[in-house]
Each structure stands twice: as C-alpha cells, then as structure tokens.
Length: 125
Image (cartoon, rainbow, N blue to C red; front, side, top):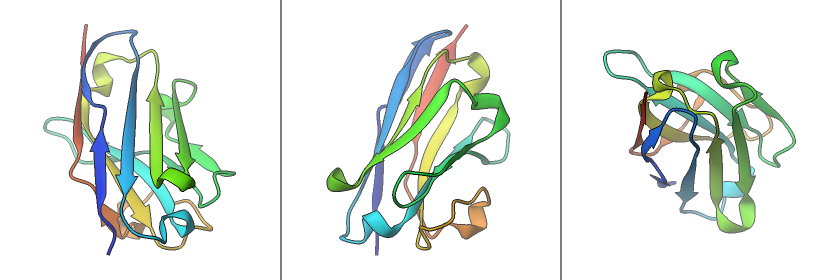
C-alpha cells in the first residue's frame, strides 16, 4: 500500500507561483509513474501532468504547458508541481496519484492505483 500526502497549496494572486509537493510512503515509490490531477468547483477531476518512473518522460495538458513543471526526487519519495504564472482558472483541488507501471505515463485517472487527499489552490484575480 502506498500513501500519498500533498502539501504546498494556498491562496495566490494571478501571475504568482506555488510549488506543490507530494510525499509517498513505501519503498517502491521509484518504480511508479506519478501524476497530478485537479478538480475545480462544479467540474470533473481532470488530468494536469504526469512523469515516468525515472523522470525522463513527462506530459502536460495543453492549458498548463509552459507554466507548470513536474519533477520528482526518488531519494525523497517526493513529486513536485511547480506552478508559475497562475491564472484564476487554475483554482482547484490538486491531487497527486501513483501508477504501479512506471514505464509509461498516463492521462487517464483509471490507470492510477493510489491517490492523495488533495490540496487546495486558489488563484485570485
């Protein structure tokens, strides 16, 4: 079993930055692909970005490309989401997720095996 705990959310003005962290328990963290998803009020949860087990392959949804960066530190069992130039439409609860098959990144929620509880990001205009 893997437990994921997100941190780093908060309130920021448009144009500002935040860095989210997600720390995992378990010794197999380095073998997992990891993803970030978000759910805005009244909307379904959506894919944001994903990274493979070694950090060589990443993928971003179009709306965050060039503004968000996913990275991981396997020695610290942590995945990060650096968010720059934040916009009000980025307001959401952000979730990290882990996928046992770490060789391939994935955009579908159904492919992820473990989820964190989420952290709120609010961007004011």
